[in-house]
Length: 241
Image (cartoon, rainbow, N blue to C red; front, side, top):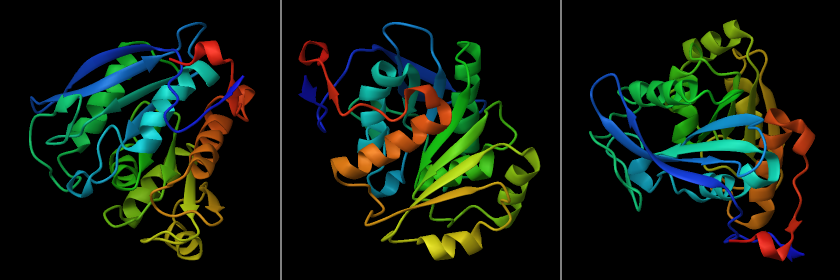
């Protein structure tokens, strides 16, 4: 057995994909599927702020794609929102402050639906939580998971829209977040009556360190594929790619 580390890549079927938006843009991304067995759940990930270094390879999302198809039979969709670049390529368009990105979120969900990927969940991190809250309530997803939500762009009306759906929403809020700490988050999220708020002790906005990555991925899997939680911390050495 070998320990799962920050650079560990586990088996999956990985496919470069292109999402096409209703306003005519092409967004580059990746779909990671379990190499064996049925898909138990699908994560549609929304990355942090591209003007501050966020992209589809932001480390928590990349590690989700590297690990969860094998460990939990969870499919992971990652993509660059409009105008965002990564080693995978650059998506068409320009950053639009979360407004035009509505079409990006819709395109990602439509792609998952068209592929027949089941039990779809939005997973947003930082700016990605704003996209999930602003644009995800009426989409064909089962719920949302929010990592380090800043609530800079999402308004009370967006929270109320989610509340009206009754869909589950979980927010992981770092104790030492730069933008929204747990006590303030409880107040600000009040309109979202079904919110499950999880304060994460000692964590910071960027979830740096394997300890915090494991907390995040365990929390995600516990909600979307609970039969696979908690995730193992070791795997047979011969499965590591």
